[in-house]
Image 1: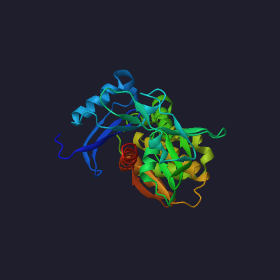
Image 2: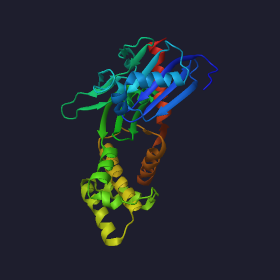
Image 3: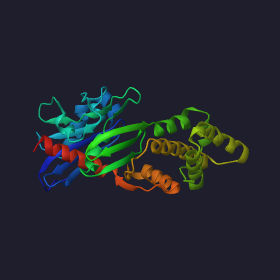
Image 4: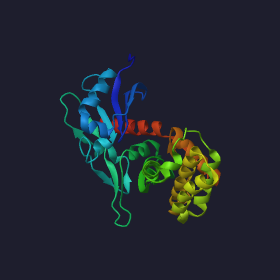
Length: 304
């Protein structure tokens, strides 16, 4: 890919199962982009440095170009452990606490995560804090919903991450539909959206969240006794889990702050549909833009 401007830095979002990299110039313009499935799980086998060097070379990144990384490359089982800021955490401190990675030709920094060292509600965040850095504004308090394998509900006070909770919604969905009796309910699903089934799951569980596990078994009963198809079963399971998550998230309180859904693609669509159904006011922020904005802010502080 030809580059028609001078890169100022490279930015990388390194997840458990995904890798995204951008070359960015001094004006914040993206000059080149790479995406792959070479997340931390793959990189532990094939080598973090080898994967990064390969993508930077493919984007024609100059030798010695500064590279800022967020996400699972900084986990204990990642490339180099980047540790955590303690919550409440000033997101502006992410850059100053970045860990430098030894490399013969490049200045590579990995941003830390954030730890909630509360004995009653211990929790950690890694990768999402950089998205929040890109979203936060000095004078704005927000409740931020970050859908994913492990969904996060975050309280922002300006640029301070004041508190958060993690909900294993995506991972539970995957486990239920692949390793429990509900895998039989979704066999043969074609990926067709059955909105009525999804909405019913959301509404029923939000109204009575304590019964979420019973609602899940009813998915199988509904199929055996009334012939519900696999796509409807899949969407109802999704709705049940998301409805339970929203009920739990709102039960913690928003303090009257506006709600932002920080997501992209199909996950954003599911949460938008659920929030609209429940009559909860919200706005949507693009997760890809937020992480790149956060990495750009961090890079500007590391290499002013």
